[in-house]
Length: 602
Ligand code: C2E
Ligand code: CA
Ligand code: CA
Image 1 (cartoon, rainbow, N blue to C red):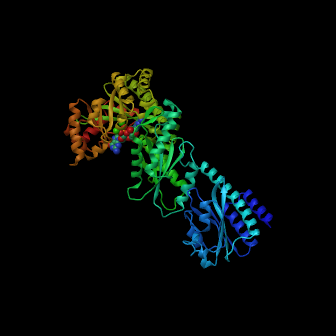
Image 2 (spheres, rainbow, N blue to C red; image 1 turned 60 degrees about the vertical axis):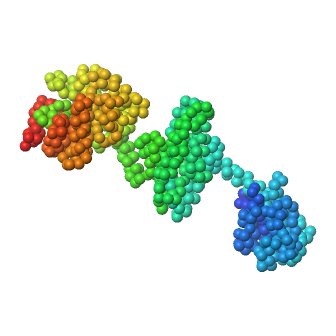
């Protein structure tokens, strides 16, 4: 009989059957072998607390009463056996002081005696094996043998379980930081989703400067940075809420216990990172860019992760160190951008990009003051797509650089053609993007294009939007603007008023002209802040000696207001949209825009 017990249980252990059913089976077999006894196996954790593992014949409330109970010198048979590390035999529960506090549990069930044997692993008590009798008695020889075999089998099963748990712990832990890792995150995340009544969100945290630190100071410093970041974020978000997904990527499962949303948590993380830290002897200022997503009922874990990823992508676009929460449509914005990038890249390689020109008019006289080159995409069916439709593509560094090269080439070519026709004395604006300042060789490209076609460089105006102009991360832009102006190229600050450029910035990075954004033009006729700002702006710009151009002039009224405020140069649909080379040539000759001036006088 004992042999059968051993064989069965050892086989269950060997085949990887989980702990609880294995011990349940053991107890059931033992209870079959010794009629009238009740088995109970308790685990003892490292802090000396009891956890019922198996007691197939005891009611649930019995085990629940024991859960978490601390072992001690007077804690029934099992708690006491575990405490002293030796067998405890109580032949009469009703009258034994060890059971004084606990006898109300077994007596109503008719259990009168209890014999408990500690289970050891490497000299430490890891559990107890208990035998309850329905009579006031102790064990007999046969029972002694069974219990010896059972404690041995239970010890084997518990040790195996401990090894499994340790392996799992290692598999779920990032070895560098000790944080729970990606695998753990996946499991925890799905567990959380299964509890729909909880309010929480996901924040992805992406370290900004890990690569730089690795490259500059070595991997030891990078590792130190990761460690420092882990230990700074953990106290902010709480234990087991921060996960290292890999490399410089962390995830935070953030509960929303108030209405402040994820932003508050992200801010707290950002602030915790702020202070410089010592990374292998180097002073590093940690910072992280973060994307967050709130959990809405019914969303899959993939959707939530993807949303947080999209938000992170947007945050990176906005600025290093920023935080963005996912909003509907973010995915569309990105796929829209990819569509635009693909289309423009195709148009560039198929030479379907053309330069159209919109005249800049002296609104007082109706004459053409200059032109702005605007790129247009010619489609397979011959239709023309304006730049606004694919503007997103200019944020892609490679496409933007190519586009600028193509446009510079076309504009230089057209300038040379106008010169050959004797049409001189006007400037042509070319739009450039941020990428042109960062990786492209704008100045060299411009010079090359002019040389190739024999065009004069000083007839070009480089139009830099306010956002590019303000991007002064590495002085690359202000330096390049300075050099361009040194070459005689004019520089205009485009879309003025849409961003945060102020007149103060004009002192640090001087330009030749500013172009007032069309949003101001819309408000220039009404009595409102737009008008007051515009009026003041024009006064100051004039005193600074800047050329000032109003964009998006669509009505005679707007033109009149601008003229009255002292801004005579305007550009907009009132005069002309962007037109092909031939039409632009006619305008420069002074034929077509007379009509616009007539409209103005009318
Ligand atoms: P932008 O530089 O501010 O160009 C002015 C835009 O306003 C043009 O749109 C023009 O057609 C439009 N516009 C002109 N007059 C009016 C008006 O009276 N009312 C309204 N509502 N709009 C008017 P477009 O050509 O679609 O260009 C959009 C933006 O795309 C440009 O804004 C510029 O930032 C960019 N872009 C255009 N061409 C190029 C280029 O060759 N290279 C680069 N990097 N960007 C370009
Ligand atoms: Ca422009
Ligand atoms: Ca503009």
